[in-house]
Every structure is written in C-alpha cells, then in structure tokens.
Image 1 (cartoon, one colour):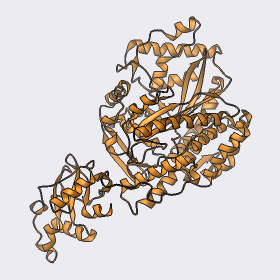
Image 2: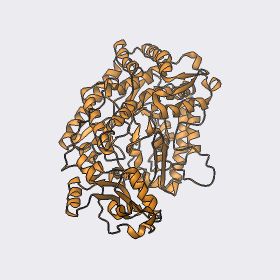
Image 3: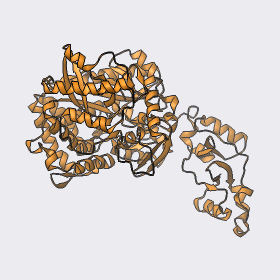
Image 4: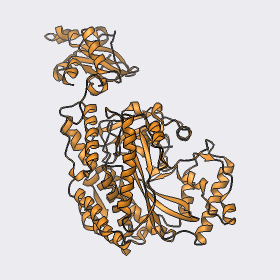
Amino acid sequence: MGELHVEALLKSPNNSKYIKQLLTDIEALEHMLQNNMFEKSPIRIGAEQEFCLVDRAWQPSNKALEILKEINDSHFTTEIALYNLEINLDPLPLKGTCFSDMHRQLDDLLKKADQVAEKHGNKIILTGILPTITQKQLNLPYMTPIKRYQILNDAVKQMRKDDFELHIKGVDELNVHHDSVLYEGCNTSYQSHLQIDPDDFRDTYNWSQAIAGPLLSICTNAPMLMGRELWQETRIALFTQSVDTRASTFLLNEREARVNFGDDWARGSIVDFYKESIVGFRSMLTTNFETDSLSELKAGKIPKLRALNLHNGTVYKWNRLCYGAAKDKPHVRIENRYIPSGPTTDDEIANMMFWVGIMKGRPKKYNDLHTTMDFKDVKTNFYNAARYGMATQFYWDGKLVSSHDLLLDHLLPMAYRGLYAMDVAPEDAERYLTIIEKRIKSYNGSRWTVKAYRKLIKEHKSLNALAIITASMYQQQKKGYTVDAWELPRGDEHSFQEEFSKVGQAMNTKAITAQENDSAELVLKMMQWKNIHHVPILDDDLDLVGLLTWTDVEHYLGKPGELEQSIRDIMKTQLITITEDEQLVKAKSIMQSKAINCLPVVKGKKLVGIITSNDLHSH
C-alpha cells in the first residue's frame, strides 16, 4: 500500500480531468519511448521493507504513527494498518557490493526503528503474516487514520457493493465475511525493484513471470492466519481477496481481480502493457493535477506521469511494471511483490539477489518465451508454489521437475552467471546465494512456522502457541541466524503472566455446540462420547441462547429414553458470559464468585469460544 502517497485523493473515478490526464500520460509515454528517452544504464536496484509492530505480549500494536513520528526519517512511511510500517531503501547501481551495501542500510534503519519501538513497548517482527493477528486487529480502529486509506476502503466497497468474502482452503479453512479492506494489512512483504531496458520489455517481463513460481517456492513465509494452516504463502490468496472489487453474483464474471498474476504473456511494448491495464481496470481514485505531461515534455521536462502512476498503484500485479523519473531521465522497472518479509534481513537480501541474478542470467533459449512456453503452465507454477512451497512440482522445459532440482540444478547456477555478468562482487554473490542453497537443502520460513505450531499446539492453546512462535521469530531474528539454522521453539520463549493474559489466550475455540431443536438424548450421548460437561446451545441464527451442563442431564444417564424434553426446556438461559479481550483474572474471579466451572466467550450474540476451570488450571 505504500505506493499510494498522494496528497489529495478524490473518490470520483469518472472525473473527466483525471481521465484526460491519464490518456495524456499514455501519449507522453509513447513519445518518450519512440524518441529513445529512457535511461538504460546504469541499471539500478531498489527495495521496500514492510515490517510488523507488536507489543510486550507479542500482539499487534496500534502505535505505528507515534513510532513513525519519533523516528523522523524520510525513509519510513505508513501502511494501511497501525501495526505496520514501511522502509524505502535508497536505489543503488547493480554492481560491486550493492547487495551488502543495501543490507547494511536496511539493518541500520531497522535498528533505528527498533530503538524507538522499544521506548513504546514495541518490537519489530519480519514475517509474511504476523501469527498473532486476530479479527480484533482487522476492524477499522486499527486502520491508519490517514485520508487516502479511508478513501481507498470506500472506493473498493463502492465498486463491490457488498461485504468482502474471504475463503482460503489449505490444510485448514478460513471462510469469513468482512466489511473493510483491512485484511490487506495482514500482508507484509519485501518488495524488490529491478530497472529494465524498455526495448527488451516483452522478453524481460515474460521471464519475470516464468521464474515467479520457482522463486516463490523457496521464499514462502506466511503459512498461517489466525491459527489456521492455509497456503505456504497465504499472502497470495489473502491479498487477492482482501481488495477484490468483484462482488459474487449469479453471473459469470470474467474480469481479473485487481491483485493478479496476469492472463497471458506480454506481447507488445510498455505502452501496450499500460493500455491493457487501463482497459482491464476502472480507476478507483483520482486527484487534481496542475500541469499535463505533454506540456512538460514540450517544455523540456521529464513528466512524472502522475495519473498513470496513480492508476497503476491500484492494480496489484505480482510482477508490477513501474515508471519513474529521476535526474531528468525516465526509467522503467519491475517490482517483485510476491516475496514476503523475513525471516531475517540476510534471508531477504538473499531472496532479492537470487531474483536479480536469475533475471540477469536468462539464457538466450528463453527469449521469445511467448512462443515456446504455455502461459497456463507458468500461472499454474506460481499458484502451486503459493500453496505448496518447497513441495511444489513445476512444469519446466516440457518436464515435471521438483522445486529442489529446478532451484539447485538450473536456477542457482543461472543466478551466479547473471550476477557475475553485472560485475557484482564475487564475495557478495557467494555470501547470499549460499544462504539460498542451504535453504533449498533444509527448510524455509513457512515450513519452520508450521513445524513449530504443530509442536507447540500439543501443549498450548492456539493463541499461546502463536505468541510463542512470534517470540521465537524475534529472538532468532535478533541473533541474525538465517532460517535454515532456526531451531524449533522450546515453548518457554514467552512467559504468560496471568495478570496480563487475556481470556482469548486460554479459551477453547473448538467448542462442541448444539442447537435448541436438537435431540436432547443425542446431545447427552455427545457429552458422554467426548467427555465434556458444558455444551453451548445456539438458535437458528447461530446466536448463543443457552448452556447445557452435565448437572442438567446427569440424572438421565441410566434412563436416556426418558429424556424426551427439548433442550430448550432443560438448558440454562440466564447466562454469564465474557469477551475474549477481558483479563483472565476476571474470568477466574467470576467463576469463583458464581461457583461455576464454565464461561461462554462471546462477541455480541455470537459464541467465539468457551473457557472452563480446566483451561484456567492448564494456563
């Protein structure tokens, strides 16, 4: 979201002045291309680092603006959520020690941010999706209170004319309705930029598409959302659905999502590429411009193409073509948007170098890809990599190849050749590509997270396990270990002090429930079979209306046939409940004072969990 740095956004997509400027920008772009005005050397690289802020309990913070103000550095900017910030690194010529130089600047800026965050009781986490995010942090109070984010939210909702739907199915399943774009705030990435030659645009861009799946498979670092194992890179599905302007209808909808991989190879120039984008996606935002780009060209100035860049900023291709102008020279670059943040800055720079090396090391046999490789195979490779990570099988050169073999035998040597061809320092190439090689032979961030969660969940409630994982991430990031050397959490990385713990950390979210018109005899059997003493009762709207306890049905144990009453007649309806944000000590106090062993945990009328005396003892 960091690209929407526009001062005066308006919510009128059909603004005629804006549309006229957009068309003028296309004409100006065409003029600059035809007159060979684009910078072709030196080739530069750049990057954007998004990161998460958490409080002392490893939960998402809401202090981004306070921390940003105190950092007081133009490299930093806001993100849509109050628990994220972004760093824009300085672009560097692609040569020599550019990668270790960029790494040094990144570490310095993160250290600066970390020192300020500590003053506010916050810590910095590098990860694709913060494990401890809950639905609470996806509500509007956690949206950064800056006008452009509210306008974007309103514009997407206006185009959808419906709530957002999220349905992601992996090992587990997430299926929710939501009323804002804030799920996008879950996604944290490390976005790499590579300047390209516009005359070689078609083959360069198509190559970036072809390698996206294999590269993503080794970089995945976002396998979970709210305690559910989803895709190895859940960001890919989550970002697509969280800003989708297409509402579900009974009609077939052939338009692409605004977040997309593309539907075909690029076959023309950069101008043709941008024209396709304008045809495919209606402008969501507008702003007022004082000058037009053709007039600037006639005056000998290089235009910023603000209208085109604004439109491009709301079409989120995973490989996005970007226009820029610096020092009176226009340039174009590819922005790699699919690689997540973390696990460490060493891993991130290695990911970036691997991508740049493969891009520059493209063998001649991969020119004219649009005539030799099926685009559907490339697109399949990308989404399979997002789902399965390092376990993916890829369609490559007419064969089915494992991620391990394709990366190790083909792409890694290609990356070395590409970097050496650009005069990148051999010690840099060796340092960072060795990180990739070790990771290929071990595991990446997603696999570590999944293994850690499966280990911890055997002894901890889900929210506690996720907090321990986050604490372990932080500790290992601070030590500077690359992810291939990360050990699984011991389980004591985060001490849960009862006076600070919340009900949500101890409650059981997989409570067995019944409905008020269910057979009472069946519910009694369920309680016996599962050895449970409390069953929340829901009505037809799935609102909590009662609680059936063991004492209500215990005397029917020897004569279940006599249990002919409806559940409605025997359940407790005067309920004592609590919310997940309440302190755990309050839950314990209520249960002791009321002499009860169970508290349903609610959000409004909806049941979100249940906490029992056993949960309190085990916490």
